Image (cartoon, rainbow over all chains, first blue to last red; front, side, top):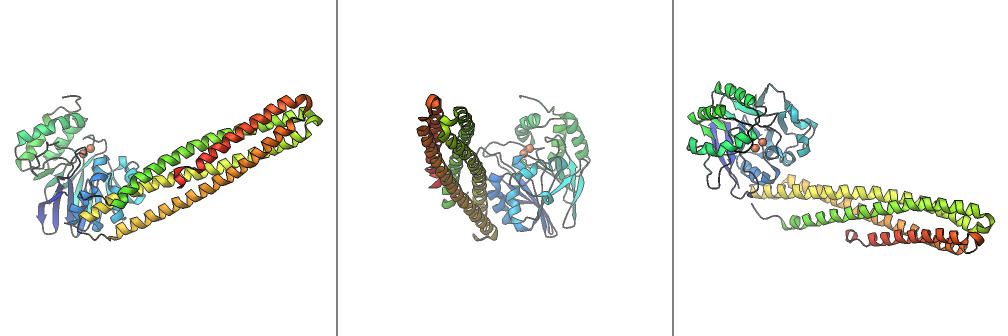
Length: 246
Length: 205
Ligand SMILES: [Fe+2]
Ligand SMILES: [Fe+2]
């Protein structure tokens, strides 16, 4: 079963990271899911693949009533992001899925009806959750061509999807990055190969450098906190991406 | 993760095997449909041949018309079978999808603190039963349709054999009439054997 860790709390405004499943079969990439709650409502960010649904669901249900999830946010269309959609909808058929307009007719192959999807235009949009305003931040071509991150200005948290992801070896399962230089080695190959555009990367770095961010939360690997956030942005800005081989 | 519910674990390979079986039945029926089409052309040839033979092949002429009607009936019968088989393939696929969803939902509920009798799992099980009942009804319908086709083919066999007898009275046309009726009989026999094999498919057990 996955672990839940509250990474931010201010009254009923909460961020919970759902991470590390010791029972996950090795052929499935490890993923992080994040639950944001505010005003009694909950939104799950990158709800995960169908095969890890039992682990994510059971961990989440310890924190929050899964049938009260009002929305999921899908950073992009990958199967490790949202192939569990149909299963979440079984618990709340009225749940909404926020996703780039690009994937409006693609993600329904994982489940949902026309009403399920709220599409995000390319420049991004504000998403409201129980009175809290969250910002869908454009991150196109990083790596998906229709890609968004989610910024919570109040909590100073940026959910960064596959950006910042690290494929950590077994046993290295700390929630937060402990040693940036050691950690980033596990992120390098991934960013070079998965991220496709240096221009898009530069725009993203400029955009997020101007934001106040305490925690940068990727969908794979450990969370960057404090000064490691800016360190990551600088590192990414310098990195040449869209590279085949090492 | 908790071990899978044994009843669900057992159903998954069964549905997979059923899907394979129904796909094979579909292929066999496609082949029979092709043969049935051949019969139609053969019956037309028999009618032309009987017309040329004129009074020497009056009996054969009557039978060749019957064979033509038979071949048309056989085609529509095969059309009905094709529709049924497609619906079966769809329904088995739905059952396969149900099994995966049920496995993941039950696992999720049993790992969490929620009650095993969670309404979502209960609803899913209810839908599964509905889909399985629909498949069972289709299975019965398909078996009946195969029986109907078989009876029709038996009639075709009788017609072909009578045509073979009538061919003997065809005087100078006797040899060609015998050839046509012999081919007809052979093809009907081929269809008959295919249908017999289909009726014994494990899918219906
Ligand atoms: Fe991805
Ligand atoms: Fe990913």
